[in-house]
Image 1 (cartoon, rainbow, N blue to C red):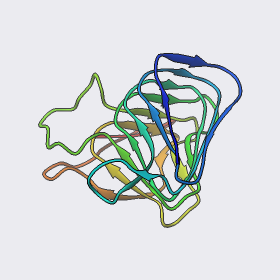
Image 2 (spheres, one colour):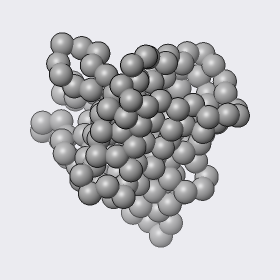
Image 3 (cartoon, rainbow, N blue to C red):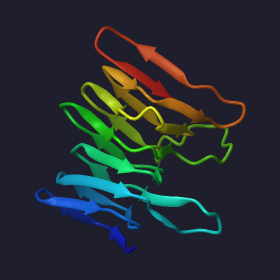
Length: 169
């Protein structure tokens, strides 16, 4: 599987798809095109973890469609849409938000921000999990998947109002 690295790009049309043992790395840029990420992902470090997406920074202004069994690691950046879901997950993979580094303060300048109209993160797969280390997820409902892990000694904060649900660490 190949790695697609996106850096300092602006895409407004077309479809970016990755499948099989491929990996998409987003280092920076603004993307408004269709994103489809599926497959098993690939190993990138000394562990046996399979990654299908690594987002270091950047802005995605369209729904990110995940159907991966690998790890989708969203360390920073923004995924925001005005309609529907910011992330639509149909796979059994793990979505990791932020970095598990036991930092005592939120990383306001780097933490991921996920904002959808109906859901920040939506899944129809009961096996999908989220590791929520840093970030903000918001929508009419923040997410509907099981939180697998948070940083030791921390809890998730949740705010409700009549129009939205927001959860952050």
